[in-house]
Image (cartoon, rainbow, N blue to C red; front, side, top):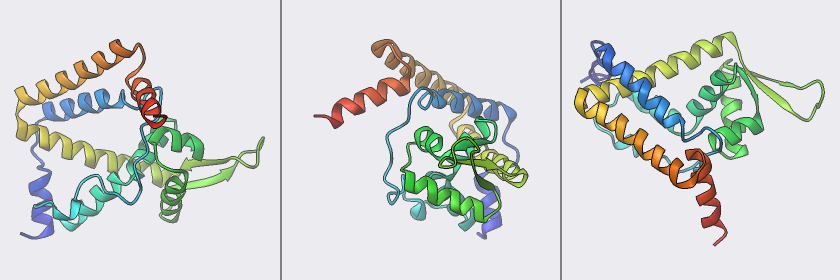
Length: 198
């Protein structure tokens, strides 16, 4: 099967809109993990999934997935959510990536014309990272790709299981917040801080 055929097989064009809605709900539930605190940093050199070993992915899908897992999607998502610009510190805190990783991602995105960096007038030491017009389109394309992958996956699960997945994850986050009296991200960050000091 060639790359184009695999691409159409992996993200089918006929995924019902219901599964895109469920993908959006799932993204909304999962975003609760990042509101109010930064996730635990992931070592930059460790991929979260063995992408090269996943059957059925085209080389393009493999590159996009690896890129998303290593942080550029998190950086782009935060830039879009924050109105198109942020400082490196804000990106580091929002994504849980190291400062060096954020810098490397920004350098790669700047070379592609996706972002531009500028110094703030009030404090020349602070650098603002902003999406370009091309960058906004690029970010939207990447987010649409991820949304399509999730919707396609949920379609394979079926409506009942997909709704149940979203419900259970949402309920799990409610329990964490009730137990700790804080947002999910704050509760997880607090727990991680306690473990780090032991």
